[in-house]
Image (tube, rainbow, N blue to C red):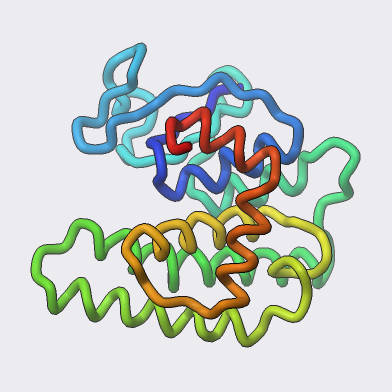
Length: 194
């Protein structure tokens, strides 16, 4: 198994989820600006989309897109029955929401020129965090057990902390709780973020 990532990007979510699930992928760091891989060269030869993450499940079988990779991890975690029925629909609903309504606008805010555009996108993200904080009723996003969705929410909350975005106290406590998990600590070390 090979995992292609760029430090601190949304790819950190699947990196965390892989470690939480007990997978030990071979890591390949990608420079997303030059689209090169640290050891082997041209990332576009591996992933024509040019962005991360990419999980090569077995030789020659790539899977891209954060939501798809996180869902695959949830369904293939040893000793864990992956979400099914309505639970799986809720997981996919949450992953889609986090990906499209939080992660994407936030990521765009790092690259768009102009203070007005950045402020607008970050304002959208702040509203989403208010919604999430109001809906969380348990330790983790979907209940008492850490899920792949928590890995993605964690990454976006890390970004919020990095840019000084205000978030609810409950989300700050959640961020600290998730960050203390051994798999999160290891992923941060692996990516040179701690």
